[in-house]
Image (cartoon, rainbow, N blue to C red):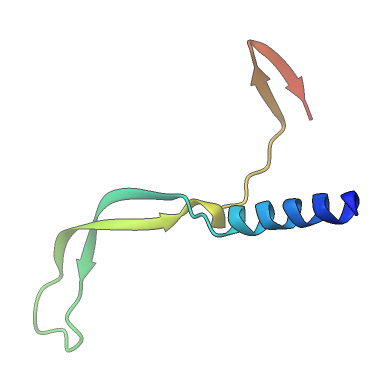
Length: 71
């Protein structure tokens, strides 16, 4: 009974963690181009929103409390 209860708690925690999204904002210009080529290209400011969770990161080592740990 206790194992089932703990398993339920862990799966509930995992489901809650998957529902969270970390975003970052980046201001950068975008270029608007005329489809017919009559208007000149126009650069305008824009805000780019990206989900951080979609990035894949590979680590070779990390620092923790001033000590380096290789992976």
